[in-house]
Length: 402
Image (cartoon, rainbow, N blue to C red; front, side, top):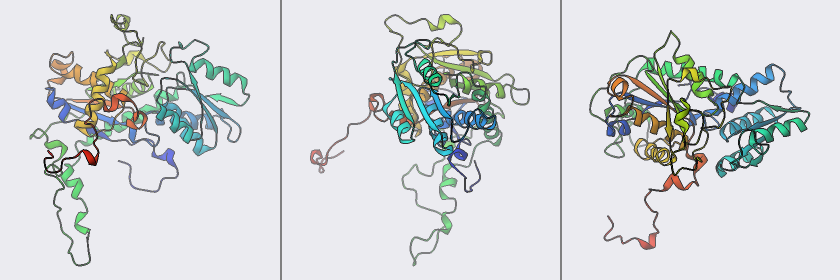
């Protein structure tokens, strides 16, 4: 983790996100390999896209494309890149205009507006080359404004190259191995605490609950083993920058050329290979609610050569796994995170395509990217569709409450 120090601005709080082991979900599905998640919602703006926003903007300043006090940043996005850019523009002093489809959440729009960005919405059903699409509207805006600059996440090489650093963080964490159990972390430094003037400091603390000092590595009652490399890498695919950048670094000779990369693409998107995977199932209209992954064209930032296999996901299972991450692992992940974990678990578990080679092998490491958190989806019905109902005090029978 980043050493504790005073950071000069919020852009300096992008990167160095935690790699966290999943415990209850893989165990319940019969998976024997280690499954870990790279929690990108710990970035300053709340998503994996903060990394590319910072790099694209700072590089554009360095090469003179962006001129402080003059240039206007215009960007088509599904929301998270826009939030990352709006955050960077707020810090660096640029006017920012974000163009995004109607289906994107109200939370994303409100975050953009709070950051000072101007938001323009476009029809969700518009194809990428439709004049009404977010991409084409952004281009039309840029053409009409002499000082406008589209940093263009779909074609900007700084999109995938920003994720070499993400891969380096993963490699460093894998080589470092597991952190101490949560009990050791919880009690670290508590011996110096003094609750009142008449009490002496103690070297231990009474756990808040019976489970509160059980480490994550103690869930299945055994000591887990770890290889010193990433054996499987799983990520959702939108612009392709995340999976292309991370996978290309993981597959280098100095780490693991045999790292197996699974690309996750929602049903209704056309990115997966072979193209037959993209056929729309009977009874499906081809639309999907999960945000931030899937497209009807191949962005230039997507390098399909580094992807060994594709997995198609559907909304219901994506949202089921997002809720499972929250309720079973305590990870406040969003819908596209659920899609990636759904793909990983179903691929790695018994009878899944990756079980024999990877999922059945204790000690191998599978890493999944979690792009963002529930912040962007608080009002979405899927988030609490199976949650316990809230109740009012007047409804409670205190004598018979169970």
